[in-house]
Structures are given as C-alpha cells and as structure tokens.
Image (cartoon, rainbow, N blue to C red; front, side):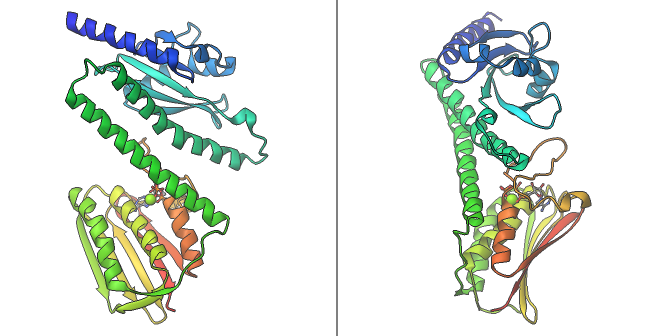
Length: 342
Ligand SMILES: Nc1ncnc2c1ncn2[C@@H]1O[C@H](COP(=O)(O)OP(=O)(O)OP(=O)(O)O)[C@@H](O)[C@H]1O
Ligand SMILES: [Mg+2]
C-alpha cells in the first residue's frame, strides 16, 4: 500500500514537471474527475472550451471520464451542436487502475481559418487530429521515460519504445497516403503504362500480405483463371489498389477467409478481393470512397485513415477502370477492380 502511494507520489511529481514545460494546455486528473494540476496554457483556454470540459464544480465531465475508462486514448471535444469539434484531447494513463491520468489538449486552428466551405474545415480538423494525436502520445511517452530514467525498468522502456514505433509507423503511413491524395488532386501523378509480369506481381502481393492474413488465423486463397503471363498497364497503381483491398479484407475479418481472384474476360482483366468479414451496411457503401470515411465497428474506430479506397478509386479512374463493391453485413465483402486490356 505504502509502495503504491510512493509510486503515485513520484509519478505525480514527474507529471507536474511535464505540465510546466508543456507548450499546450495540459492537465492532470483523477478518475473521479478531480483536476490535480494544470498549466498556464490550460488556464487560458476559452470559456466555451472549459464549459465543454468541466462541470459546474470544476471537475472533469463524466462523459470524458467514461471515455478514458474504456481505454480510449483520444477524443474530440465537440461544440454545443455536437457537429464541429473544437479540440482534440489526448489521454495518457499513468497507473494501471486508470486512477491518474494526463490530458493534453491540441490547439485548434479554427480561428485562423478563413475557408468558407465546411468540408474543407472539417477535413483540416481531421488531418490535425490524425497528426496531433500520435505526436502528442509520443511526446508524453518520451518525456515520461526521461523523467523516470533512473527508476524505470528495461522491460517498461522496451514496451514504451514499441508503442512509439507503432505510432511512428502509423503516422508515416498517414503522411504517405495524404500526400498521395493531394498529389492526385493536383494532377501530379500520371499513370505509366508498361509491360510487366502479372504472375510475378501476384507473387509479390502474396508475399506482402500472407504473413498478416495467416497471423490472424484466416485462410488465404488465391485463384488465377486464364491469366496472361504479361500485361501492359501501370503495375504500381494496380498493386496499390489490390493491396488496399486485401489489407481492408484482413482488417475487417475476424474468422474465415480472404480471397484474391484474378481472371481475364474478353476485353478486360479483373482483380477480385473477397472476405468473410463484418461486411458493410448498404447505406454506408456510398461513403466508403470519401476521404477520411471509416465505418465504426462496435462503437470503436478501426485502425486506418479512410484514405485507401479514395486513392484506389482515383487510380482506377486513371487506368480507365472501375471499382465495384458487393457486401452483406455479417457475411463479408467483395471488391472488384475491372480494367480494360491494353
Ligand atoms: N473489406 C471490408 N470489410 C468491411 N468494411 C470495409 C472493407 N473495406 C473497407 N471497409 C470500410 O470502408 C472504410 C474505408 O476504407 P479505406 O480503405 O478507405 O480506409 P481504411 O482502411 O479505414 O484506412 P486506410 O486505407 O487509409 O489505412 C473502412 O474504414 C471500413 O469502414
Ligand atoms: Mg484501407
């Protein structure tokens, strides 16, 4: 008991140093909602933000505490209409029982924006969220390691480095996808039609996804029917499209199979990715090609940014091809890329 109290005291000291040096609004709070410490930036938050964050006794609102208890690492603070978010709050738990945590509020850029369209504003906020959440987490974790450098044990450091690595990989992939989307919008990417070995491309795709599919305990089926040895097209674009289909199929399938079928028709070639996963509701099908659209699974967001299908669709159009989807909730999905033969 005493050791627990001592550990809590040490952590609290460390956190107080973090919040004093932090350059964004940071606060320390308990699971009861009681705020134990805050920095200058937190004190200067606009009243409307504080109202969304705190109840009339100056404690953190219950809804925010509940999010933390369910293990959510970051939430958006919405305005009173519930449609626009003002800030992102990133949480970091410092005790196993979730009783002591640190919250970091990412500054909002809405006041400096003059964009008239809501879409662009919303997009800007989503990008800020995707960039700031992992960065805030990485920052807090690194500061925590440095502050406890004499007391922290090796295994804990390795765990923290693993979590940082995961977030850096995810951040890197977001930036790559986002830059690709912008380059496509600006017309900077042109297809490059060349002759390539189709079977070799399928082997490369297999090598890159099979380990992940198998590690989830899913069957991976590949079927190729009358396919040509060589074909003329943009190999990289086709690979990106099919890989996104396969990654999605793997991500959204808990048991059963993921299948890649390649077949040649009279004037076209088709790449079909089928899975036995959660499926997509009919009403959501029209949205999945929109940037940043992700369908919530059992109340939580899946990993990913909702850019893959948007980029895949743009690539398919450049190749004069078409993507179509069939899906049944609880049964699975089937994504088809149909390309004309050249
Ligand atoms: N095979 C699938 N089964 C169920 N839902 C899917 C499937 N493929 C796509 N979706 C839905 O469509 C959304 C958009 O897919 P998309 O590939 O654009 O984004 P993502 O996979 O979430 O992120 P990203 O590809 O940018 O890493 C997904 O978040 C998911 O909700
Ligand atoms: Mg995807």
